[in-house]
Length: 182
Image (cartoon, rainbow, N blue to C red; front, side):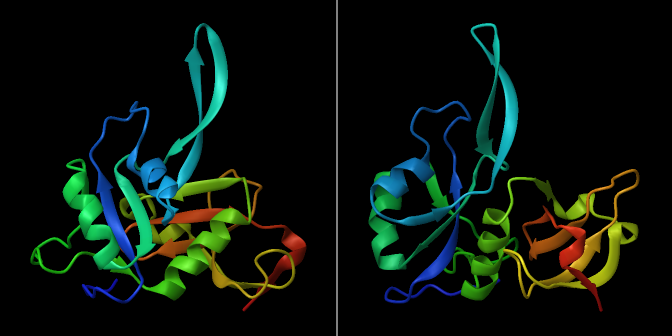
């Protein structure tokens, strides 16, 4: 996690959207319409609308989004939108908004986009017992990824654990034939 605020360098800024969960036009949609590259971790939920059960994608963490842009382009939008804010590190100053390194964010986004079968974990949800053996993925959409195999009791699905340090982790389904033990 970096703490830099530069007007001319594109970074992945960590943002807060304070709109209600049922808002018609959340911040990530607004920013995408303005041409920004936005990443928001989405998860499938079952809900009932007009008596019918429907499956819909909603944000995993309601108020969290990542925006890839320069601070100079983002500041005017934040000033005009009272429900959109930078996130700051706890105990830090309000001068340096939180950012995520480019390589970490691209790796995480690629892993999330590689599978529809995802399981997100908040930092406190993972125990040391859940971290399995070190593996490398050989072939497939995650070719070259290295990490830990997620161990969950009773699960027959193999998952690679990909972390976005300080925020959350995602367990991505991996086919056993692509797994190489390290």
